[in-house]
Amino acid sequence: MSRTSLYKTLATVAATVAAVALVSFIYYNHDPSSPAAPKCIFRLLTGWDCPGCGSQRALHALLHGQPARAWSFNPYIFFAVPGAVVFILVEAMRKSHPRLHRALINEATIAAVLAATVAWWIFRNL
Image 1: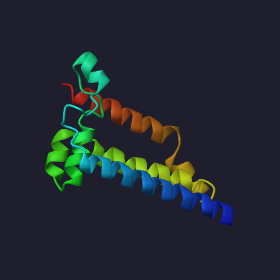
Image 2: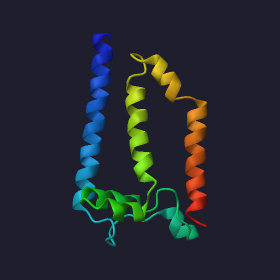
Image 3: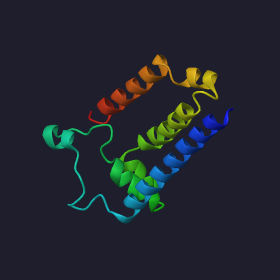
């Protein structure tokens, strides 16, 4: 691994950690159930839940050590957030680990994630 590649990977990891820390700080200190919290536009317009509805409250509950409550708000975040972190890290290592990148980030994987998201979207509104 070249020095430039290593620096880029470390910078991506550092930016990801900083973003997670910032989001964690915000969701720990701000109750998304309050009237001032942003609301889902899709739900306001249709009355149906989108795949992300409840994610703010779920993250808040997780950060306060309440995984069962978080699950009740939106169980999909237990899969989506770790998956997103994996994709970010694999993308950061694209040049240093091209075989891993090709194996995990391809049309089939993207189609599977999209299909799972759409299935969750339909299932939660039945």
